[in-house]
Length: 154
Image 1 (cartoon, rainbow, N blue to C red):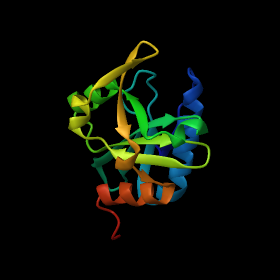
Image 2: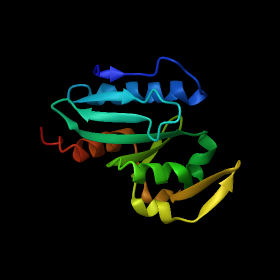
Image 3: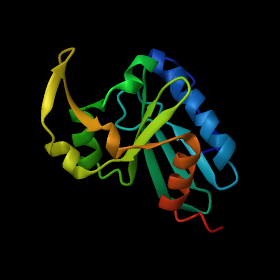
């Protein structure tokens, strides 16, 4: 894997957004990490960040790009099946990211998310994650990723 691996075929409108976000992360993490955007349209997670010195040391990101009107809601939505797949595939640690045009929110995936009440939106089961459980900002996210990889003191 090269230091930054992007999707080369865009199947969905979100594919390019995933690439753009990976490039943004890479600006901050390129000296310490490799970043790989999943090539699989049905992938459970969108981005894998790997320690350059220990390929078993990884953090997974699931990116949800949203319209700015949704950033003022008290909760963020994510697919229930996505939560089950992260749990069942043991993709830990995983970070759920909601990206808007000029801000982002994120939280660590927790197995208890699989026990949240679901609702149906556009024929899909989703769970709501309270905005109050989330952190905010790209710099906070970068620091959190480095903490999870135990790289902040280097």
